[in-house]
Length: 274
Image (tube, rainbow, N blue to C red; front, side, top):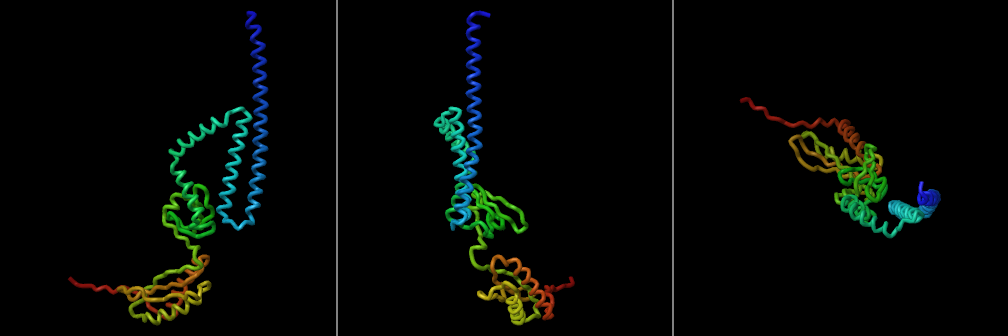
């Protein structure tokens, strides 16, 4: 071994040891900072949740505020950890911005969902707890997220719809008004007097639980068919009682016509011998 190699080897070992110790200390500091930072973020998140709990602000906006604050704090935490390792965050920010543009171009649909989410929050066509139809799905709104809206359908199926699909489709909000109509059609036999049938139905439908008195139920002839007159039966009720009133109205119609002895409607057909 030459004299030069003998002199360089200790220097390399010393430099390697110093580098390893330095990296180890930085790694330990980064790990400690991560756990402490996450703990602090959790405290701040819970404090914000408690602060907003008794606020009259819309529940959806509360959720958004909590999500945005948590995401922002986590970004600052990552930047702080990178600073521990001596990584220039200014150049990293430029790199992230460039990557963000590329990702944004590739994920334009995701950005559209985010923009639509902002629209849903600002203009509030519905809120959490409302019963709606949106993008062809009917159910109760359980969450309006930054990118998607979640509904629980009548079949108790959780359905997640992109906000862009929701905002660009026709939205029907059944909870927006204090009451709604139950529309049913009833076919009468040609031999049955429509006036008698309407009088009996009006009395029985008005007695159904949760049918409101104002506006009063509507019982009218809506069309004439080959079998006889067809009646419109339209009681009104609160949205929470809609299906109960639907089922009870069917039962009331069957019971009323049965008690009155009304015959079943039938279509008259002429048969010709050729």
